[in-house]
Length: 36
Image 1 (spheres, helix red, strand yellow):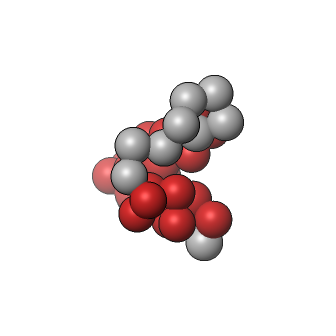
Image 2 (image 1 turned 90 degrees about the vertical axis):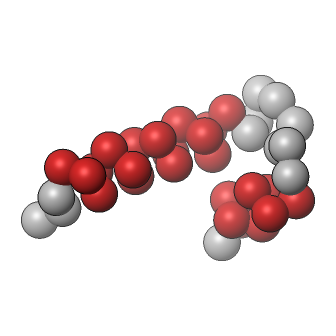
Image 3 (image 1 turned 90 degrees about the horizontal axis):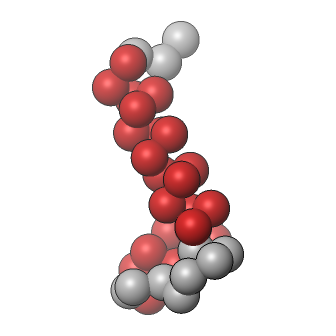
C-alpha cells in the first residue's frame, strides 16, 4: 500500500501529465518522462 507522501507525489505527477494534453511541455525531459 502506498504511503501518503507517495500517493500525493503520484497524484501531482498524474495531474501534470494530464495537463500536457492541454498545454505544451515546458521541457523535453518532462515530455520524455510522460511517455515512459
